[in-house]
Amino acid sequence: MFTGIVRAVGEVAERLPHRLVVHTGGLGLAPGDSLAVNGACLTVAEFAGGRAAMDLSRETLDRTALGDLRPGDAVNLEPALRVGDELGGHVLLGHVDTVGKVVLLEQRGEDWLLGIAFDPRYSVLLADKASVGVDGISLTPFSVGEGTLRCAIVPYTFAHTNLRHRRVGDRVNLEFDVLAKYVVRWRDR
Image 1 (cartoon, one colour):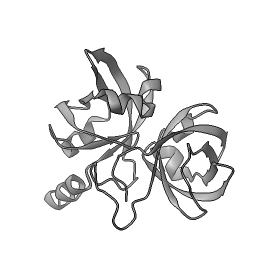
Image 2: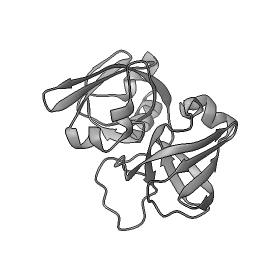
Image 3: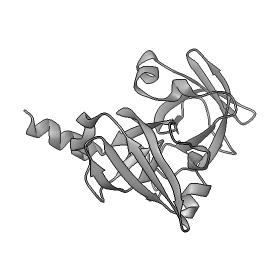
């Protein structure tokens, strides 16, 4: 389980067909640890010299934007919660629901405005002022529409996540609120 509070911005060292290796930005990890990379929960297979190697399943590659990564790309990293850790963001499982596309990223005074387009069938899982994970960042959506959302990004979040490297057209991982998923499933039965 994760909170969407990015602990480090790492850098892709290698991207092989079914393996991702990242410089972990000072995070101490061990084989078997869970690590959210741009919001996708991965298992550390090897860790040495500040580099974590993780295997990528076909499902992970099909469901996320991790296949887009190239050496040098910045990635948001968050180790799994441990008992007693602060729950500062919102509950994220690291189970990416879909990939969205950045359609707006512009500075507005001190803040930034982020707009994302995604498959409209997921709109039922969003509400204004609820929560969404964008590349593993806990954000509060507003101006939610059919297949669109906007989020205000404060300067700290912009400076301490991979958002500062994002451009219009980039694909991002989206995880919607787990409670909303269960409510919708229950309602649809």
